[in-house]
Length: 195
Ligand SMILES: O=C(O)c1ccccc1NCC(=O)[C@H](O)[C@H](O)COP(=O)(O)O
Image (cartoon, rainbow, N blue to C red; front, side, top):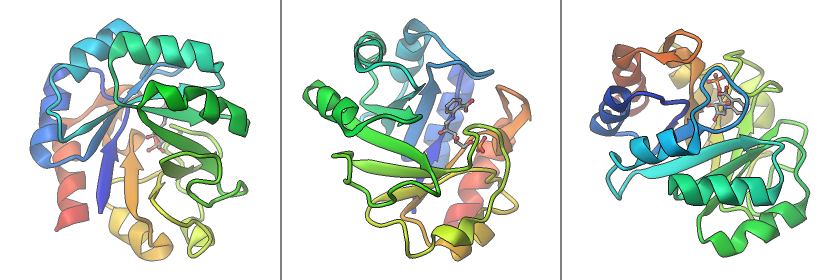
């Protein structure tokens, strides 16, 4: 089970996520209590070993803005939330990074339908920490897809059983306050997923 931990802002929390076995780490570079500048994301990304994917998270920005932030931060993946046309993904192909399409359950849930490499199926409001009907996408989402939205150490096993995803993504459920991660919850989440 692939695990992405999103919304990290502190070097110590990045280290905890890496040591606990995260596969990917997300830096939010769009409007959010978790926002970091591309420069801060670059500092954090520099602490991450090669085998862990660094992801820049965006919502609604045009491809050129995404490209500039991705290059400035050095992330190896970009995750696009919002109603991006297929052309936005095509426009970013030559960046050579992993493209992640982030959508809610009503969207086209075939990973690759927009030439993306990974699909993230999220709650209607990304980063809100609100659980939703995870079982509704069971069998509908296909390929390499991550389940997100309201996951936490105490419910992630239930969510995996309900939706049968390829991986999971979490942010709010590992926080003591909006934008403030709790390292113990990061470790507990990885333990819950991996056993
Ligand atoms: O986290 C945010 O604040 C955010 C803001 C705007 C776009 C995306 C955002 N987060 C993206 C993520 O990958 C989150 O991990 C995902 O939405 C799940 O969030 P949560 O329900 O808080 O676990």
